[in-house]
Amino acid sequence: MTRRLPSARSTGPGPSILAHRRIHAPGVSPRRWVLFLHGFLGAGRNWASLGRGLVSERPDWGAVLVDLRLHGDSQGFAPPHTVAAAAADVSSLVLNLNLAETVVAGHSFGGKVALAVARGANDGLRQVWVMDSTPAPGRTEAGADRLLALISGLEEPFEDRASVVHAVRAGGFGPHIADWTATNLARTSDGYRWRFDLSSLDLLLEDFFREDLWDVVDPPVPGREIIFVRASRGSILDDESADRIERLENDGECVRLVQLDGGHWLNMENPRGVLDLLVKSLPR
Image 1 (cartoon, one colour):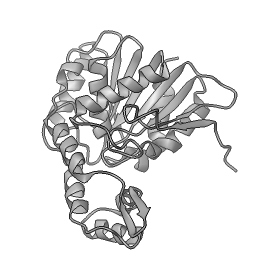
Image 2 (tube, rainbow, N blue to C red; image 1 turned 120 degrees about the vertical axis):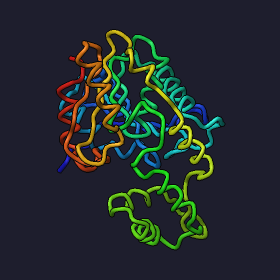
Image 3 (cartoon, rainbow, N blue to C red; image 1 turned 90 degrees about the horizontal axis):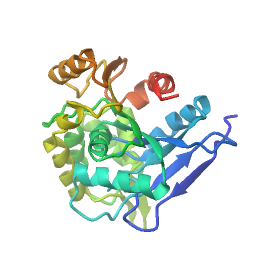
């Protein structure tokens, strides 16, 4: 039987504080915390198993599973719905929780939010992990825009989750993505409906495509490491951006590029590989 680790779930005192869940090893009160930022249409729970694995193998660190604005339980946030606003939400959460030493690890959409957090962060931010994401502007091949367009065209309410899974698979997405998408449904009196505001999410995604965060990476803040993890298959970090990051690394900057086996959804396709990287590379 898997041992249940201590955790605390909070939606904050109001819509200005992101919903989050804290996890730490039994009997430990860590001073240092990794904030996990999920991808577009995801939620903090997507990183729960990795968070549990991390605090088991590195009990000196705790994990904070964050629901970014308009995702999971972090609903009702005021516009503008931008990457910068999402990053400001994360920084406010760090202050609210009084976290003195942090690492921010973001996947895909969350990776660009993590870089935006670093743009205005204080000395307490030790590392930024960018999990198969990019600092560059432009549309990507991850398919978030196609998925959003697909589910926006489905008529609510739905009779059950299975009907949404079927529709997403029929739209060309794999079973893991279809099942994960359906976790964003909430039961209502007349069936199942999306728990988020699709039109506001569209604004957030369009800003992700517009946002240019190379100024955070080149040059980086001295002493603050930025680690890019690039999926070996279907990465949204293109060759030109990867080459630029490698040049910075070779020049001795605090930037590193690691290639990891798997497709874009590394937390689902290669969780052990992601966990091993974190366990080995987090500050001691």
